[in-house]
Image 1: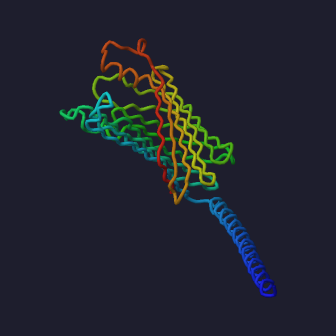
Image 2 (image 1 turned 180 degrees about the vertical axis):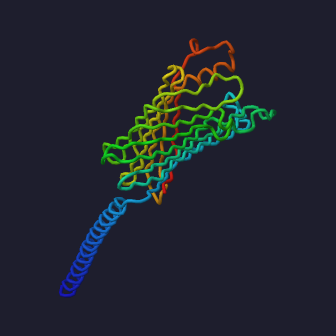
Image 3 (image 1 turned 30 degrees about the vertical axis):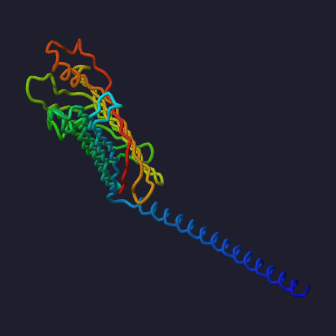
Length: 306
């Protein structure tokens, strides 16, 4: 009986020691987590202070979408032999300078993609990837500050394709007016004096004209989220048929070491482009008869921010 009592005593002491050790470890872990959270907060505060200093600010993020598939003698499909794929790359970058009396904001957007759908293994006609989307936009905005929120400004914006038909068409907007910055990260440009140069070859109906330029951009990073929304519109004084607008939105969420998920969608209306495309199949189309449909695209894929 005495030996049994001693054995029970030792077991109780063992459980007590183990319980005490686990509790101590849990307490230490909580303390370390609190320290990590404090350090992260201090680091975030330092980043905010660094960002508030005047000088050049740079940033970029992009999205890559990839989908590849191959079927050979897969008789359950209506097309048993099929090689298909989509490759898309989107990049957004900026370089901004903010001084006491002036600012200079520069932005770049590249959106290119290729598609392939080969259903005939005996023919090489559709073996290669074809260009699906091809957009290149570069803008530069300079402003002389009249106040904290208002500035006299000049804007240059160039839009074209870079894979197929470079600068055919190409659009160059040059104008002067006012820039309004009501809140941080939001820039609104209104230029009542703007000339829209349109470059195109052949017998196309692309026409340059004088008009008004409206440009708005909101770019922000909140923690792991990158966000950019951009609207570029031109209203021609010569004819509404020569007006156009493009609105793009990009989102990026960083999961690990700059890598995450990205999504972008865009809307566009350009009657000159609609007419040029319609005349490829019907040479009799005019501005009065062409159906100026809303253009759109979207992409979801892997995102990288730096």
